[in-house]
Image (cartoon, rainbow over all chains, first blue to last red; front, side):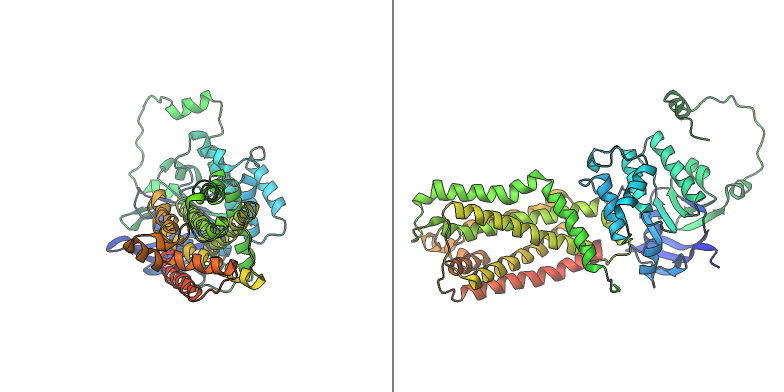
Length: 253
Length: 255
């Protein structure tokens, strides 16, 4: 049986003479949420592009759902979906039309039904027949992720899914990711927000200067630091907590 | 690299449907590609036409081929525009990470260009008929005219693809079309080239628009087409092949 949805070994990639990935190794367990952390320009998106067959690596191997990305890109594409950094939605079409288009491109039996279901699940039914250009950032991101779920791919890539979203939008995306994980979908997530990784991920890897410098569960990573000292600090609510309390959203843990 | 795909044509059809919706929902596109050429035609026939000596009694007949080429030249600028936006907004990345042929999104745009230009051409011809355009051409001549226009559209569409894929800004993506729209003015499209000063005339007679316009005009009025049709075809096919090679290279590199 296949236990790992993604296996990456010795992955290398340079742009011109600038090495971005210098031997990246990691595995992602089936049905888990994997968060790749790194600062801007660390190469997170490059890894996502290689794993989603958009870019060819210079060296090393990567398999997704058991298929080598360089050898069997078509099989990889059948197993995955990508939600890129910029919402990949068609602005002129309506939300419903976007979903139907993707369902038809995936050759599903009943595109209308698939679209209705996802619109409902992502609370977009009311806005379904409006052009996406009129959507808010959070709605657009929800539609974007909904489009990625069409056809129930086994592995979902989310490249910085919450960058540029307001706190409400971010919590919505977190909820979606948790639901996906509960349903057994493997989620590969990149983020620059440490809190996001902490909230969502079963496994966290840190990419720095072209290599994975730390990889494990949150507990594993915490062990790498000296044991916690007990200090008494007056805890002020963060502005985010205040904001969320005022607008009455308490869905966060 | 690209494996054969049973759904290739249906996927392309979905892409076509998508960009046709873009056109039909964009008043700006419809205005530019259909209404502007019609306005030009009205202007030239009813305002300037009386003063232009073309040696024909029906100036609409004389003018129509040039107007059609102008309409197509402005139409393909939108292909470039749509392609550029698709690249920018990441929807191409979504398509390319899906199990569909890599070239399907690009061919969707090319097909859209053909279909939308065919529609605007038909609309313009219908308006010309109302304005008194008459043709003695038989079905074969009309087919030949259609073939030339399709080749012309394809040639410019591939040029537009290069611009759309390699531009770094939205203005850059469409700027290449301005000289193309202007080219018919320095050709036999509006006035006979004999009326121009020598240098301008030399340019006008040796640029592609003149031979294409002359070939279409001859076909529509049942005159002998002579060499013009071969020169016209050579220009169209030549531009198309060169542009196709560069467009495909740009697509491999960029998209």
